[in-house]
Length: 480
Image 1 (cartoon, rainbow, N blue to C red):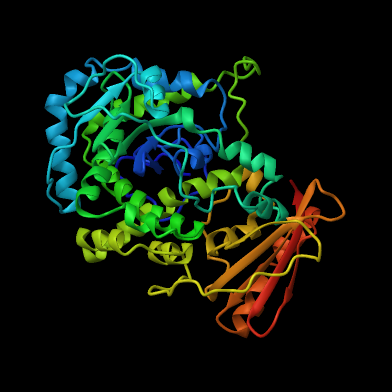
Image 2: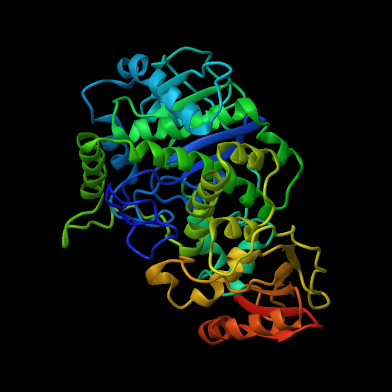
């Protein structure tokens, strides 16, 4: 996550290790809903959005973290500010924002997309598929169904043994901690675009800079959907790493345009935007000594859940921005049509030191064998991004997982993990990760770079050993 940036500075090239008090656009979210792709913006702890989305605009630090009632903060920021209602503002503001988005994307609108604004209760009902009463709208039909709980699994999804794998590697305290943090985000959704009904739905009844930012982000998704079949990649039944890589392009595109919107604000508008953020922080965090555990947001924070949920936004934004700067917005449309498939490709486009452009998809690596008779929880791919977080396990609890240094290897070719219930203790799970490198030198270099992980993750028995000429095997056992 990122710190606030002064209005005269360019967006950062890397996610800084600083408190998440951000000005300017941040993270938005997309999710499979109603049989198609639903794209939405969220505010607050966002790793839980694996159940309804993949990330979000961050108000409070971390997945489900922060003090105070986040739902109350959302209502104050989006429901009680502004001199105009959203319904009053849309006739004037929507044409302007549509034109802005089209200009930034280099695309034309084939049709207008209606926008609805709902108060908090009605918005929650819309997410659940129940919409009592009427709602302010710029036109268009109301959906018959809300978003469904059938999201494509990305690297943040805890299912099929992935949460246990992360715990066994020491990246999270336990699989249960990770899953609780991951699942705590539906209440923080600020808006979404649903192509099934071709409509943007906003949470917030008063026009404000944060509502406008949300609308800009969602309009990018709506415009992209008129030119690219965003569902196509998901219909291909992609593995989790490919879903996260594709999400990085989808969300990075919307973030790039939202940053351009932010950079175009005049001094008065910047002051209004900053005031809204400062007000949200002041209202969320109680003064020292005044905190009441009963009133605090008790959702679990997990640094890894936060980092993986934010990957498409923090890293996708800079990757897409780099592509647009060097090749133009048309190249972004090409990326949407021919999505990336690995986190290595996203990091390469992003310009992380050492990563190379033109990277091939990950190779198939045979799954490591579990002990005979052990209950296997699943197999999957770790990917370069989570792999590069392993040296940070000692500082993650205090500083979060921020990859602002070299990737852990430039020779990653692919990997596969197998995770099983520890035969000696069914409250724990063990994993073996087989990482394939381009050559023996890459294998040896990775082993050297991961030595700090072996030292820092002793509580999970972290270990690594060469496994053939170009492979390295990682092992560990952690709490379920």
